[in-house]
Picture 1 (cartoon, rainbow, N blue to C red):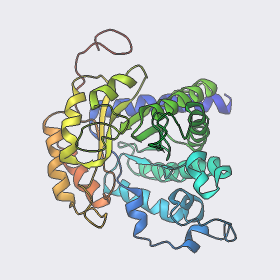
Picture 2 (picture 1 turned 180 degrees about the vertical axis):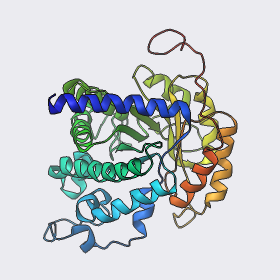
Picture 3 (picture 1 turned 135 degrees about the vertical axis):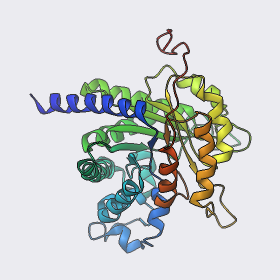
Length: 355
């Protein structure tokens, strides 16, 4: 069997495995990477390492680069989340596109960044799966929204202007996806979606890679309700967001970031009974305080998330900004007490039949 055929067989098995696990239990996603990295207090020198010692632009703040310059720290954080009870960890690649890396003049490093991040995460996942074969661990390739938007103008004086095109996004996402898949990601998570057109570029790129590599890989999609208006930045309600992506074969759809668990609940309720996709959520640890920090304790967050479970809203649960392994430990213990959300018998958006 060729290497490519072996890879295709393995990806298909993972698709089957994670779907099987979703039937058995609520899966737990990890928490924040950035919050954990802050504790290391890395300096400009640490971000650079030896390799980028003489690089012409400042690199501090480029967390994705740490997968190359401080891989041990990334490995430690992944392990802490698995030890806390996570089933799925995200790769350290939230800003891993040429578009986002342009801020640091590191566009040429994108493949290596994503490949190494996925490789590190997969090594840790394999270690934990080997220890507990009855609880397989998975790696989700994190695909962020980039720092540009395809459907809105950044210039209030020129509403027709766009800082990026759909095709530019597609090409950038395709590079990222190829590297994540090659590095060993088990599934892909398009997250913190504030502009659905950006997300569609990412999803289109994923379908291209799947076709070219002749593989199947599960895809999670997670939007962001930006404020009390109950809409994404590009103006969609939770239900409108769901409808606009329902033609795509997703593993799950849900929401993350911007809001705490209690404020996110109405938006999960709006979609939970309207799709046969699994439902995911990874909210923030409440809202930030005046200093931009998150004060919600693991117990406080756990109480709010338990309301999701009581109402049969969730299949995959984790944390976003401000969350730590302590939060995930509490969430995992609560999730273990409940059955996963059962899919409603509704007409499938993709097949037009009951599921």
